[in-house]
Amino acid sequence: MKIRHMLAPGSPTVSFEFFPPKEEDGFGPLFETIDALRPLSPSYVSVTYGAGGSTRHKTVELVKRIKRDAGIEAMAHITCVGSTREHIADVLDSLEADGIENVLPLRGDPPRGSDRFEPVPGGFRYANELVGFIRQRYSFCLGAACYPETHPEAASPEDDLANLKRKVDAGADFLITQLFFDDDDFLRFRDRAVAAGISVPVLAGIMPVRSLSQTQRFATMCGARIPAELLARLEAVQASPAQVRAVGIDHATAQCRHLLAEGVAGLHFYTLNHSTATQAIYRRIRDQLGR
Image 1 (cartoon, rainbow, N blue to C red):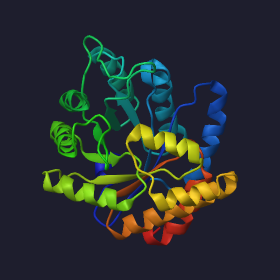
Image 2: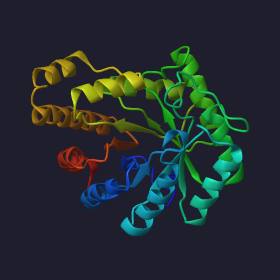
Image 3: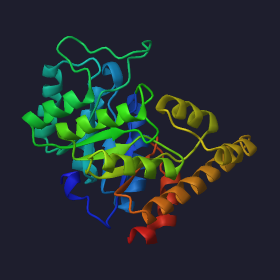
């Protein structure tokens, strides 16, 4: 089923993101996580796409396996990194042949060791080019990424929003935000997007804190801000991993409750291939979801 057909006012989706393990022995624990989350009846799950070819074939196989064996709708990430049009078309052909209906086209991060993105000859420089390429050739439902606090490489918030509109105009059906920790950043961004003529649904990307240092690293990479009050709570218990996780669950639950009250189109959990926090949050918001 295409994700755009799941998105309806008053019926927020709940989805989970996984990444393919680099080693084969990581797939067993990953499917244990997927099995643990399956009773939550996710609308769909997404699988990230390794940079520089590191896990690309695993993404394709994992997405197919999740849909076939776990019976969950799955969306494959596709990036521009290190790929020609022909290679991307081969990947898309394979996904299409196995009944995958949803794709998340991304520019992708620069390869490790590089501080700037450079397309390969015959490749794409920007995500909107990739979105347009897929829209012209295939019938996939297409998501796209957005940044409530502005993409780290954007010249300004206005420039970032203009780039986002290019992706939507090229054919994106819905948007998923990068992680954020202050709901007001999301709500202001959503209002600005509508004012800029972006009318597709915007789903909120939620990452429950599991580790302070890990969260700080991700926040820096994504241009996200950790609110002072949350940071103080985490620093006060950072010697106890269990207490850090508890604070993370409390904060993410409060985020979800507020966003649902504000009519968010969907909640997309960055699980980092773990299930405990997501399960705990879901139990606390289940009634609000109407499930």
